[in-house]
View 1 (cartoon, helix red, strand yellow):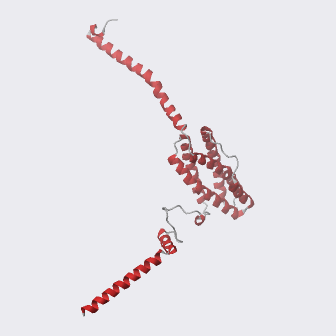
View 2 (cartoon, rainbow, N blue to C red):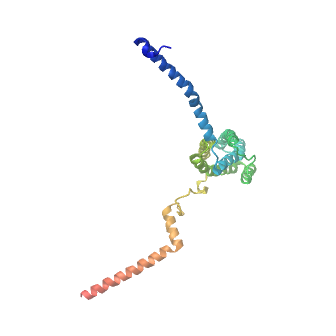
View 3 (cartoon, one colour):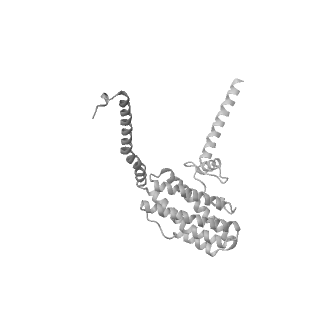
Length: 254
């Protein structure tokens, strides 16, 4: 083979270009398989991350929700007295069927066993609905489902923001959308008893008053602890001492 340095100038330039192209193609051949396989490997690694007890609890809770809310929705679609209750009952049942499918797929991927029947409380709620009719059924349906969705909503947000597992994160993302939509649907009936819902947790140690304000709660707490009476006693004594001292100075000045 003739060294490139002994070739004519034009041929040397051509040989250099060809060598560069060949090197580039070789680099693509060697690097491309590794690059192409990097994304699936990273995704598989993320999906294989150990799941926490909170992750497992979320999978179970979402499955349990479907086990009773889907039949509850079907019941509402059939026997709801209010047209809006019948409409959202059918929609909630339909959406829970899809969420249930997603939950089972996710659980199979991460190896979490799921329940196959509602728990004791959920069976009681279904029995309540079965025995109720008319406007009473509508109220029970909306109240029970609205309260249940309100409880699972923050649990989903906690797992969505902190889980290390991609599969669980994906399910939490989907469940968040479903639950938020169901909350909105239930509230659209105008039958939600907001006063009966648990109050959101405030700052640590905070107490709410009867009007729902932190200020009244603080005053009530002070009174119940006897702090308010003690403070008033100290203030009263200080005022008496100051008044006596002022009176004494006025008398001496005369």
